[in-house]
Image (cartoon, rainbow, N blue to C red; front, side, top):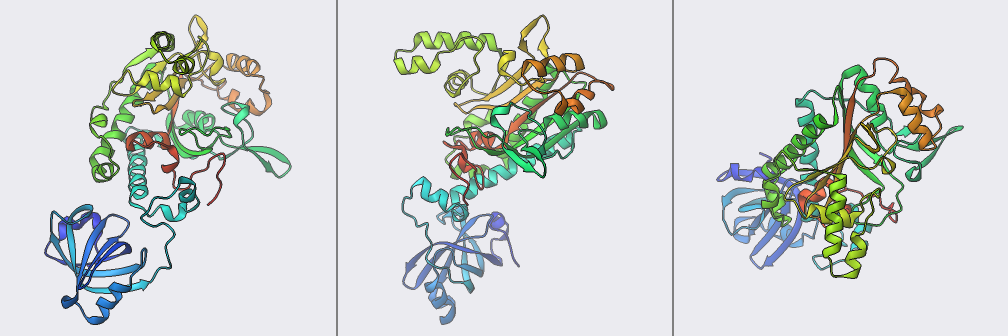
Length: 443
């Protein structure tokens, strides 16, 4: 019977088979301690010379790191046994070697980040990277589950687009036969077409931003989940966002406790991530930053915190604001000049738009950007002019406001930033299986 190591506790006292790879080995003469991983966990397999044939014991001694093997043996509980989840080991009765691996380049010693990134195709096998990807997978599944269960329909949006959605400075151009095309910055504009057919939708896929940034928060290719809802104003949208994020975090806590523990995550900081989340206006956020700047004694810190009304927040501003809260915080009502062209202006205050960013605590910053969209076609045309964008490529988008327009809102959540926060990581690059950075396209 072939089992998954994540379920090893269910098979105590039974003889089972594990298909996997050798993660590590300790040679104690007549005892060979094999750390076997199978993609769902790691368990110690003990090969005792007197319990197996000479051929099997010889094979166990010849195993090298990352050799592929099939192990058969009985499961026994032992709280001292290492592994993930740990506390169980396999008394080996038979072992089949599928391949003896060549000398593995990633050894237990310390390696530099650039070396490990060059070996990303192999680094993914390490326990830390394995744990991060398991959390990512669970988070993405939780996102889809919540949206599906709350009546939103997943509709795919194109990766190749004829125009910009989030500003022309971060576009990746693509030669599309005789035309100029771009890699999608977002699926949002197409989502807005989809809501008039299905009312509540979301898209989920890769997006691309040619930002020449080397910060720990930026990738040039990342995944976003983007819900869009008809007959929804900004206040209703924020309620959706906080319930959605709470569900994702609590699901990861419940289903990936072993992985989060391995990563050393302080889960107490995640346990209170429950709706409702605090809300502050952009105006108040600027006042808070001015106060922090005034209180700062370090000149460099003062410079980092400096901001004038109308500026967008940088990482130092977001970090300082989130340190004042124990859960994500909404900053509502950003200046129109720092946001995208499609956001509805605030009534009687056109310099502010109906926008909100959700900032994650512990200094992780923005994980969601959302807004109520402009629903009037004439107002949208004016905003295109304000942003010096040509009307022709957006004519189809303007048309949506001519045939049954309604108030509508939506948001985009960055998967990698969110998972980075949930896992407590220092750099976003570890969250992507194969990260794309300004200086990295390989492997």
